[in-house]
Each structure stands twice: as C-alpha cells, then as structure tokens.
Length: 578
Image (cartoon, rainbow, N blue to C red; front, side, top):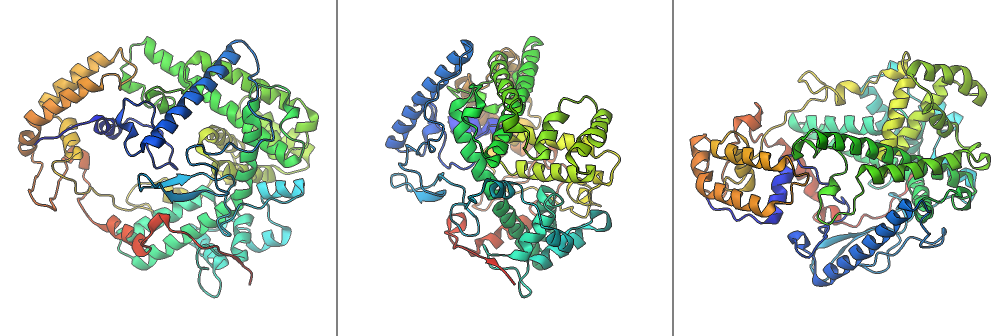
C-alpha cells in the first residue's frame, strides 16, 4: 500500500486524532496565512494576493492595538462610531443579505456575508421598529396576556409527546404545516408564549426523535419530526433576527472604541442600544475572563512539563495555526480583560445608561457579585424582586428567555456569557420546580432505555484510505507504538505540534510503505479489492457497535428531493393568519 501524504493530509491526521481546529463555518474557502503552505489550495491567484494583503493589514492593526494596551492608552478609533460595516474587500461591495455565489475563477460555491440580518420568512433584511421601546420588545419578545393564557404550557403537567402535539396543532393551517418558509401567526404566538420552555432543548429533542424514527425505519414519523424541527428553527430564527441585527449594529459601534472609557459617547442613547451595549460588553468580559483561566492553566501545564497533547483541548485552538494573531498569552489576556472590566464598570456606573435596563440584565450584573447559592437566592427573594415589583418565578422566566436569546448569538464571543447565565439560573432554581425538565430523558440519557435512543454504527471506508491508516496507527501496531513514543518524548518540550510536520511526514510515509498492508491483514482488518470494498473497522474503535446499518444514509436521502441542495434559492414566505 502506497500513500502519498502532503501537509493537508497531515493536518487531517491531527484533526482525526483529536486536535480541534476552529474554522469559519460560513466560509467555504480555506483560511490562508502564508504562501508557503498548501492551505491556499482552492483559491485563485487574485484571491490569494488579496488575502495576503488583508493579513498584512490585520497584523498592522493588531500591533497598533497591542502597543496601545502596553502604553495604557485607548486605541484610536479607525472610523467614526456610526460608520457602516467595512465592505468585503475580496468580493467588492457586500450585499444587503448573505448570499451564495459562484467564484468565476475557481467555479466553486462561496459565501458572502451581508450587511444586514435576513428575515428567514420574507428573505429580506430584518425590519426594526422606529420606536426604541418597540425595538426593545423585538429584542426580548414577550406574549400578551391573551396569547399567554391561550398557549402557555405547564411543564409540570405535560410530557414531551404532549408538548410536541400542542406545538404541531398551533403551527398547522387547515391540517398541515405551511409550505416552507411560511408560518402561521398562531405558531409564532405559541413559541413566544413558551419561549423559555422550548429553545435549544426542544430542538434537540425533536432531532433525536427524528434520528430514532430513522433508525426504526419509521419513514412517516421521520418526515414528521424533520418538518417540525425545521419549522421550529424557522420561527426561532424569525424571532431572534431583530436581536441579532441590533447586536451587530452595536458591535460595529463598540469595536473601534475598545478601551475608550467614555462609554456614553458611543454606546447610544436609546434603550435598545444601551441594552445591546451591555450584552456586548459583558460578553467580552466573560470571554476574556475565560481566556485568563485558560492561559493560567496552560502556564501550569508548561511548568509541569506536560506533553503538548494535554494542551490541545485548552484555550483557543486557532493559536496553532501558522502565523496566527490569536491572543492567548496570560499577559495579553490580562491586559485586555482588565480594560474590558473597566468599560463595564464605566457603563454600569452611569445611571443614565444602566438604571432603566431590563431587570434580567441588571440582576445578572448584581448576582455576579454575590458569593454562594444560598446568599444569591436570599438576595433575589428579599431584595431584588421586591425592589423591582416582580416575583422570583417571573425573574427566573426572564432569565431563561435571556439565556435562549444569548444562545442564538454566535458562539464567539457569546458562549461564555451564555454559560454564566446558565449556571446562574441553575443556582436561582434550587428547590423549585424549574429544576425539573421533561426533555432530560430524551437528550441527556444515552442508554437504550431512553425514549430518544437510536443505534449508532460504523461506516464503510476505503481500505487503502486515511481512516484505515489511522486505525492501524491507533490500535496497537508495535512499530507505530515506537514511533509514537519517540514523538511523544520529543514533543514534551514543544507546545506547537505543527512545527515538525516535515519529520512527521517522513515517518508516516515510511510506516505506511513498510507496515501498512501487512499488519492490516494480520490484525483481521478486511481488505476487499473491489470498487465498492467493505471495510470492517477494528473492534477497539467499533466499541461493540454494529456495522453499516444504513439508516443514516436513508435519512440523508430525504434531503435529495431538491437537486440544488443547500445552495438553492428559497422563495419568500408569509405569516398566515387564520
């Protein structure tokens, strides 16, 4: 067996054995950093030159930013606070909404980010109300009294099948779901009334039931759950669109002013602008506090002489990329975090900016200074809720709604603030019915007794491909064990596994040439020399799972009804009022 390994394949090896590399999920082209690497594959000369220019421009901007932090200065704004987002230089002027297009040079599909968030129903930019209070209501949708009385669920009295059935009935028009991307007004009202009770847990539950039905070969149920989960995601994205747009506008104002403690000069004066500004600032604080914890842990591992593979799961994986500008060292993270905390304090300390924000945001700020769960619940019940004129139940519901809205934002940088709010809500809910969730057996129980269980299985693979090589390299080959042990000893003093790619490539090619095919046959890995060869993986990786059941392929086949696939243009829909 002869495998020709290049750098891209070696990076694939690293990814397959557990190295997490964070890439832009919405950009189909590779993310290049240097002309000396094959990461430029798939890009035209023009695009490559443009990317090099952008990298140089970004490096100059980052150097200026770091110099300002070291001199304890506020980085100068590179554009006015109200300036629109910069155009996408590589493709010219950005469109109003994000689009797929065909690169004329490479003939591949590319993604171009738009200036505005798209309304998934009308397929046009999200429309924001003119009144600031109305825009705040768009950010945090709450049902009217009549709608709440009609649609509000009591999870203590309901099981998941009943919740799904109520959602289906609310969304249907004349006995069936509206054609995508149309939705019913009653369905939107149902989701708003139960926004804190549905969310990500409801989506995951529907998805697991879809997978279970596919495993059981129940095509009718598979199609039903697939339609319901797509319909719910459509409504969820529709309700979340205004907040995403307001957050995006706020990021464009705050970004050039990072470090400027005169926050009143750029956060805005309207209630929706100030609420979004607090979320962005607090999100930055939570993210950089997490980066400090990661940097501390990395330094501890460095001092103890831990091997590099112990460090892979810690911190931002983008630091392993060539010529990276990722900030991950403790000194830099501490300086940025300190400045972010000062900006948050300046915002919170200004009554005109902070005092009339929604109660959930102000409770988040207050609660993070309270030590201990018991003290937190006491403060909530005896001080905060009476002062705000709300009940603890209403506050917990508001925090769940806020948590769901934050969850819908991009994970970078809002994942950390989401985790903070999640832990805070958990502490608030101790001793109440809010601790219980009917979704837990479906999404947290992986046993065969779970109502959301489905049987996973191993797939066929090319017997002469990379996966077969990795199987052989991973599951006990004596010769490869020696190579791994030698590499381990050499890498303990090396924090970057990509610095020795040339030597690793040579070792892997030698191993494949000399030991690959022979040892596969000795260990019982079946190789069939046909075009549709079946590959039985080693039992160590199979972990008792059956092989090639085929139900997942049948599930994917349901997606093939549209020949254009994910690049198809979706027509606009409507909100159907019965």
